[in-house]
Length: 274
Image 1 (tube, rainbow, N blue to C red):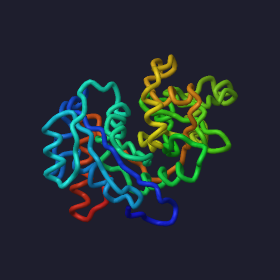
Image 2: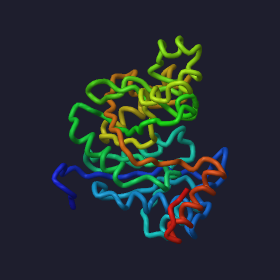
Image 3: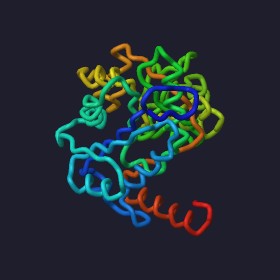
Image 4: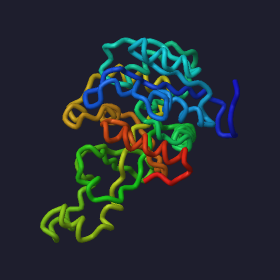
């Protein structure tokens, strides 16, 4: 097996879950930007990783499989009934030999940096007591602190996740009391944003941990927050969190897609994207 760098001899397999349906942007992974389907852009982004030795796109529709194959990628059909991307990648991972590191990259993350992937892989391998690794970014905008669409993560002194929430956690009680509300506190003291971390959607699993995780029943906090990683925490699984500087924006809406297209056009013309 080919290895990259000195950190690991483990096989690292990236599995990209890709389903055809999407509530807010139907068929989005087949929508084109820069002459390529969105799923192909994500595939090409992952190809930049120095740690990943194999990439598999786990699809639920022949059209997605064809798009990946035409781009020279490896795609496998999976069940259309999976309730989450983790379940979809587990179907593929269960058929892999040995205990490789499994990287879960969302199909609608065409801007993900290979540096983020490699940092998360390295963090999991370096932390032998961790089952899963994930990434976070600093928050600079008060709107992100308050938005339920931006998931916040609380991290302990060892760099492992304590909790994930759509609410502003950890809640700055004294500042909120002083200013009358959290919203006012954030407006009056923008430095409060530094106390929050935005969780991003990249996960890296040890294969055995992935199989255990997807075999667990959902927990109440997961159902309430709509965050499946809380199932792992409540069942005693350890999640290593690494902070990264590179941002990645998922394509969820038509405006997200148009922004990505504009970035591609700016890149082709040699201009900085807005």
